Amino acid sequence: MVFRRSARRMRWLGCYRLGPVWKALLVFVVIAFAGQLLGVIFNKSWMQPERPHSLYALPSENSQGDSLGSCQPHTHIMFLKTHKTASSTVLNLLYRFGEERGLKFALPVGYQFGYPLPFIAQRVKGYRGPHVAEFDIMGNHMRFNKPEVEKVMPADTFYFSILRDPVALAESSYAYYKNVAPAFRRAKGLGEFADNPYKYYDPRLRNNHYARNLMWYDFGLDHTSNFSLALVKRGVAAVRRNFKLILISEYFDQSMVLLRHALCWPLDAVVSFSLNARQQMPSGRSGWVGKAAAPAPLALTDKQRLKLREWNALDWHLYQAFNLTFWQDVERFGRSRMESEMALLRTKREVLTRICLRDGGRPIEASRIRDKTIRPFQSGLVKILGYELQSGLDNATWEACLRMIRPEIQYKDLLDLRQFPRAQQPPAAGGLPVKREPSILRDEDRGGKRLVEKDWDGTILFRNQSLEQVDSKVRLR
Image (cartoon, rainbow, N blue to C red; front, side, top):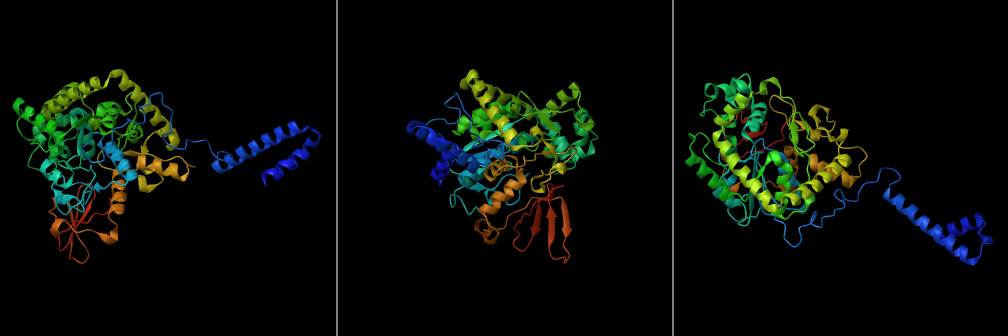
């Protein structure tokens, strides 16, 4: 067909007057042009801007930028998802990595592993006893309990977590858990709470753990103990013993580089957009998010910041200890090498931002996101922001971009549905009932035969004859 058209074009151009050599050359040129045209049509590049075949197909002068050579990627991973520390963004990395490789997730029955109670293995959906079934990745909120985690995860599991400056964490916690923690609910503002925390804080009240030494609590340590250097040393030693790597949220890009080398992952796997952010804008240097002007209830003086560090002394010393370790790891890694890899990471993030996101990648209020299925869950004083995808993306690019911005709750639901189709719900371990933590809201159904309980995050818990928890999707506001 192409040859016939070429011949017709040659006759139309008057090529019959050319010599045989020129005729052959012109035929070659026309055929080559036709091939290029067909390629353009099939690639549809004449209809939309050219995009890389892979979201991550960027050239790199560093041969180690995308691959780490002969080491084998870790696929058995336990991430202790601490609260308000950029941990939702880290969990998204794990969700994407596991989903793309068909790994099996240790998922909670609801959205957290019985938090704020200490973790027990029976909280894992599909768990039937130690070593009965192998799970690859665990990362939802829990209060850490190593012996119980070891019943679920393989012996070669890589354990890691993330910390944040306790003052910044207190600001985020107050904003997010204002209506959840009684200590925060009673104070008009965080500054007022910092001036006299004992006036508002009662350790006996449920959810007040959000108001003091929250990271210490998440690591399974006693957050109400009186501060002492001996206690701090024991706590730090326990964390070092149980975790191979502790990231620092203020240095998110450096953390991602260290994490990807520790896990032997390609750099692509740790490229991310910040998720679950509260009224924040991208920061040009850190790659994470810089705080906008704080609302009045979150405003703090320098003196109040010092008081919050004293109030959260266990967290502050934990953070200091692992901040020091973190920078020792960076020094061993090499400063120039770190800068090179961070530059590549940021370049890839910028390219993905242009490809995937509308409005230059600026996060927007959930109410402005037209696709209601990717609106982030809302809680507290300030709005939790999300993203909108660019229009006109091809299916493969759209799916890859969607994975990067899909909120944690919706992503967990998706993985849960794929791993446990609703028609084949597995029983709890050994057929035993699962003990529930107390919930906040209770409601009788119309028949008065079943008690419906809602936890603070909107998880609906049904009490039936077997006491089994059945989760439903959180209603997005």
